[in-house]
Amino acid sequence: MNKKIAVVGAGPAGLHMAFLLSNNGYLAEVFEREEKPGGMLQYALPRFRFPREPIEKKAADLEKQGVKFHYSTSVGKDISLEQLDRQFDAVILACGEWKPRLLGCPGENLPGAEQWLPFLRKFNSGKAESLEGKKTVVIGGGDTAMDCAIAASKLGAETILAYRRSREEAPAQEKEIQAVEKAGVDFKFRLAPKEFIGKKGAEKIIFEKTTGLGRDLVGTRELVEVPADFVVVAVGQKIDETIFENSKWDSLSVLPEKFILVGDIVNKKKNIASAIQSANLAFEKTKQIIDN
Image (cartoon, rainbow, N blue to C red; front, side, top):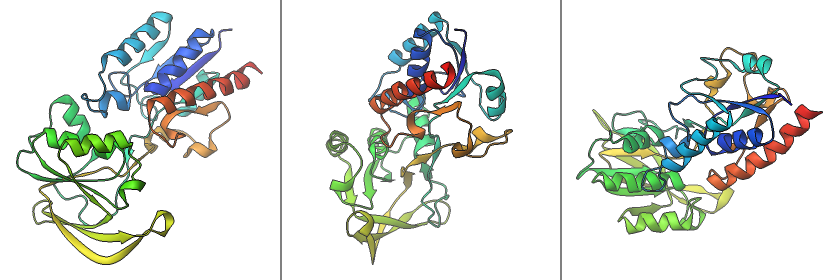
C-alpha cells in the first residue's frame, strides 16, 4: 500500500488516527509541537483527573508498530502545511484548539488575571504559585472552568466560580459541578464580567447580573463588585492560527480535500469519547480519499 499519512497532533484523536492508519497498512507520521504525547490530556487536564501513563504508553506502543513521531515540531513554524501537502498522500489535522478565547473586557490583561491554559500547565507541572488565602475568581461554566476552580482550591485559594448563565445551562458535566461544590467552591451564577479593576494588578471584577435563557440572555444593568486577588478566565478555546504560517492557506475552510479535520477542531464536545468517535469517522473518509 505504502500510502503516507501525516497526523498533526498527538492528542487522543491524533493517536487514535495513527493507530487506525498503522493497523490498516498505511505509513503514519505524527507531528507534535510539544515534547510529549497526549495534547490537552497531557498539559491541561489536571493530574487528579487523568494519569499520564496510559497515553504515553499508547504512543510508545505505536512507535513499536512503526508510527514515526516528530516531537517539538510545530506545524507552521518548523514545517508548513504546504510541505506536508507535497510530502504526504493525506494530512490529518488533529491539532486541537490551543488558543484561549478572550472576554474582551477592559482590564483583562492586568497582572493577576490569567487564562486557563497557562494556569493549568503550571499547576500540572508543579510550578504554580501558592494561592493560600487569596480571593480567586474563575470565570466560565465548562469542564475546564471546573478544573481551574478545583486546582485553585488545591493551591489554597478562597475560590469563587462565576458563570453568566444558570446552573442548568452550564456546559460542564453534572459530576464535575458536584466535584467543585464538594471542594468548597462558591458558585455565582448569572454574572457576566464587564471590567477588571486594579492599580498594579487585578483587585476586583465588575459583573452585570443577567436574565433570560439561551439566545434571550440579557444584562439587567445591575452591577455587582467581586473582590479578586487572582482571576482565571476559562470561557473557551479556538485553533491556534500559527498553523497557517508559511503557507498559502489562512483558514481550515480553504484547505484541499486531502486535509482531513478531526478532534476538537470539529467536535462540539471536547472529551476523549468524542475524539475517538471523530477519528473513526475521519479514518473512513481518509480511506475514501486516498484509495480512490
